[in-house]
Image 1 (cartoon, one colour):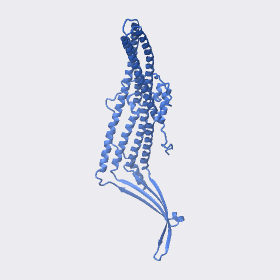
Image 2 (tube, rainbow, N blue to C red):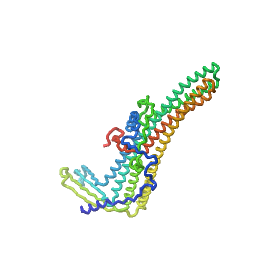
Image 3 (cartoon, one colour):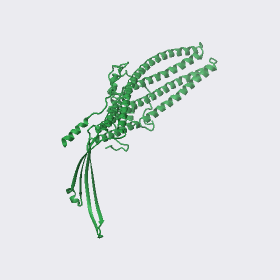
Image 4 (tube, rainbow, N blue to C red):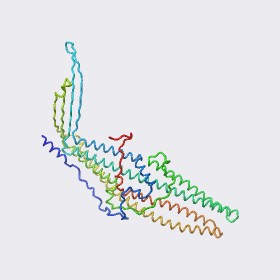
Length: 467
């Protein structure tokens, strides 16, 4: 009997999964349009900015962010589900014990009592002849790995949100500093124009126009200061804080120096580098195992059961009286209203859906890298162009001011160059922010391997170990 059981067990390796064509599109690029020959980063991408403040924010967020904690908790749930599914591959064993005292009265009116003790062991196991149990276990295991990749993707997304909020803070603080400097200059210029007005060397219109400029700068200050505070609020939320008081970013206002474009690798590298692609592939794999389980469910099952029972009226004699039972049962569906057939069709449709989703994720990843490279190149050129405009506008502003103070031209030319210079200086700050955000998007699009090095917390919400 034992050789026969081993043969049946080994037969459980039958693979009923469908053949899935997950090949890449024929026009899949061999390299990105703006290929970078730089060496790939082996460290978390944000360290490329060389900012201790950003490093500290990232470390705090990866430990305290509620969304990431939710992702880790879901990962632990999926691992437990996979462990449960795998438990069906081995026999289960249960035990039971009872003790009772029974009393009865016979026809003569006498009471009789006796003790009854029972001890039982039960075991059952489905011989996985067609691989149904194994397929279910493999499906759950692949799903668990996909959820783990979801957690890695959440960590990658969180790191990008932290960096962008940090850049927004620096952006608005730099704009505030620039506007404060401009406000001081234009207040002095307003005083000068008022003095010239009192000396009948300037018109009331000149005074009004300069006053309008001062108030416009004050209005801009109100806006950028509010935006900086909102960025602090977002950073507090992302790092798991209720307030931004303890973030330690009060004096931070300079952009980090942008480094050369990092290594992009090849488009095929994204398949292993991005957690969302890996998650999509694992879910596709899980769905093929689900098809195998659904197909095997239409075939007969062989169930082995064993039990040993001990019973006696005296506890000392309990192990002397026993009954051993071994049984094997074969069952299979005859008529189920096409329920199992429909389940096979459903799981096959899930495979088709996840195959299409996998290809979509891959194509989206390529587009995101190309977009990020294009934006970075665009903002580098934009900053160069703005620098040239600022140089020309500063020259024009100095010339217009000199001509006005010497009575050669009216104040309108000065005012026009003032406005142009303020606008360009603010545009340059914004372009610097956009360039850094494009670099963040590029790092996000490339994925990287650092999320796989994260150590997920092994604690429940109560702070106790899961085991």
